[in-house]
Length: 189
Image (cartoon, rainbow, N blue to C red):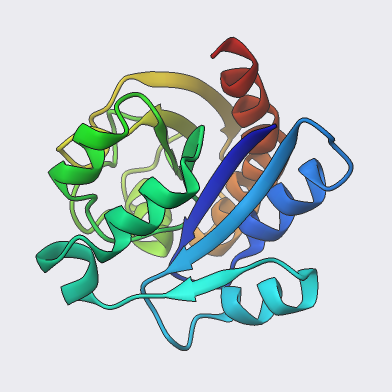
């Protein structure tokens, strides 16, 4: 049985999509969901989905081994960042090499880095009159959005698309591709 741990900071729509994707898969289980926000909607979603979820604070993540110890206990085959906004500490990267995946709402290397998340990305794409956007699924390293790229998918952007319309197009790509790519990476291990 392959075990995945999901990290999220917000509403958890990608978490819910991933949980549903693997729900009837006897070879993969979502072991737990971890969030850095005590009021994140992902906690409500996990409750409704009957998935274990834990909240941690900045001290537990960066200044202690609490989160690392939880992960060592679970021994996940993959750690998935599904809308998680904090930089992953080096100790987690060192303990789980090539086992932490992130999804970014743009075609890296464009529109990546600190502060480039969510609507900030989509607005920057609109402001720069890009003709396409998309998603990038990549391994996590010590720098924001610079890990090896696993997969990218594109969508066309029209002049009429505002940042909200771009976000919706990109979210559809996330839902379609993220769980499938997670499964492919698990199978390749």
